[in-house]
Image 1 (cartoon, rainbow, N blue to C red):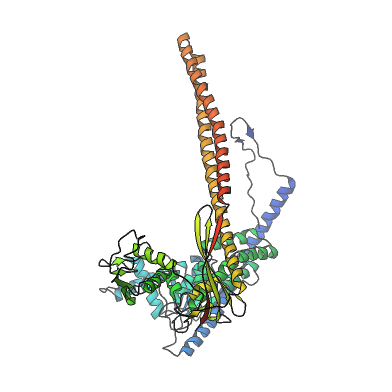
Image 2 (image 1 turned 135 degrees about the vertical axis):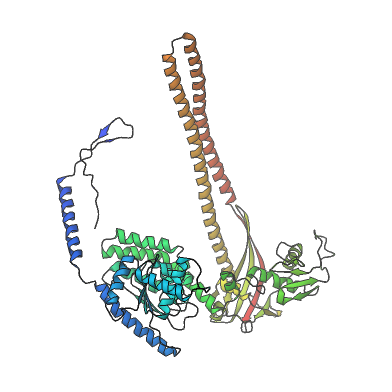
Length: 616
């Protein structure tokens, strides 16, 4: 239903922007007036219909839902066979008015006397009584914090745990309280923000919960939009099933839950037919599909890998015994190259350099300190070993110069203690892999390490899977005389094209940003000069008026000299404006020419190594 606002004051007048003319609003046509009367009559009928409703079917269904939910929760608890059965349910609503209605409804049933309210104020008579009794019970103990708000919340939660069976809560209960003794969540009013739903379930589905949490959602199946929202929340975001936290990665993929909620609100407000609703939700789902699929894939890989190094980096777990992926690779390279020259303590990622392997190196620019060295957490008695340290730079330089003959490497997956899904799911556990250094000299000089692989069944390997091989230790075999398959060359070329596409996209965004900055500078320059010209015009008009009003000849002459100076200045500003516009165009042309020159990239591909690999 659309709303139309009409100005009833037909005799009112309004001035235009210049104050010269007054306009009278156009009168509505007969057809428009008839349409408004028709809509007014519809609104009156809707109002009468709403007043005629005596029974809230949704409230009646709640009683059935609670009994079924308690039965399901009872079954879950009985299967677990731990402790006494708990009949606890939290019902979430969106408004205080709905909360009061549900409370009065339940008080007329067998749940009477077993219901507690929870909202942002908790000032109803029942809550005040619970709070006062709680204060008397815990008087003189440290349970009382002195904050009435915090103590009221604690009192209501304790009453729900020990005496009540049902808590009717607004969104105020979705954060900051722990209800792990309750395993039935009823979303009487379903929010559209998936993060809010996750928070609600998280009140019960948390550490200390002994049973699976049962979630009951109210859904109007005759409303196409409601149905599609639920499908997104349940099927795409996986909010109501799976392991605890499984939806976190998916929810994180949609950026802001508030933005998602706004999109849903827009669909409800704009769409009037089922076809429009389906179309808009299809568009929204397509936009989210790739993000959600990628998030699920990442989450699955993290779980399957059993918290390997990549997962530790993602969740940013700080540990003295763990390194980031980059630091781990640097540590392993250093341990390999400096093994004959240093004592290594792998448990704390530290080493002491007993002999300087670069003492005779002419290219060495900085003296190498014997140590001790330590990676990761910095301590006072040790040098921090990092990529920028002269020793690390010298190690990298020398390692890059080492020969890389074609050999067979046997990677140890089974003995690594890691579960790497990408490698475990390979149909064949052997193949070929090559690496190359791809250098681009364009807008900037960039180096890329390309990895390409081919399985022994001829199937190309994903570049990420190639990369994950090097998370494992390996044993080197004898040098190979076999020729590598042609698929390796094709794989390297595909990786080159991928890098070039990404570079082109970045350069396009950079060009857009530079043009936008140039346009803003142009507008600022133009606005400043035009404002100066307007100010000079205003001064000229004022002096002309003063000259006409002046009585003495000498005063008139003085005004004319001022007019001449101001006119010269105004003409100069006009010239400056044209010069500035020409300068802007010259800068734009220079920028485009410079970019065109830099986009003529010089590409260099340098092979690094080729191996034949197998997984143990």
